[in-house]
Length: 111
Image (cartoon, rainbow, N blue to C red; front, side, top):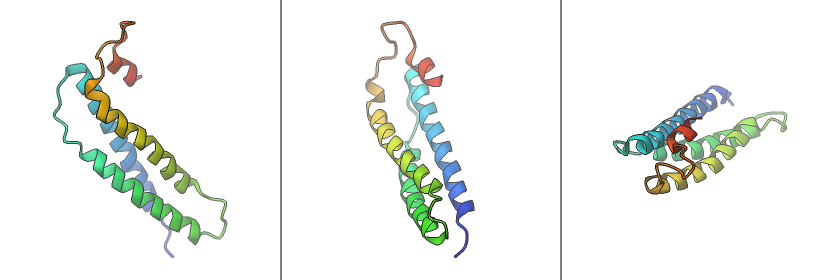
């Protein structure tokens, strides 16, 4: 079986870029209260995570040493984080722009 490392790395990089884009859109909306985002990163990330977990599981099956589960663990972890992020995306437009303490939510998220 061919090595899946390069494909898994490419999927990982794409997921990371999508997470970054989602957070940047959240910050932009909270700072400027303008929405020009189509949300394509959400559906794309969901598909990448599903495919990544399948490929990572196949990668585990193809290896002689069963101890290397890095990619499967990575995609599982990101899938859990993505569930939370999806919930946050549904709520972000209802979030207050300023907290009582005077800390700007977009500034806080950028940190």
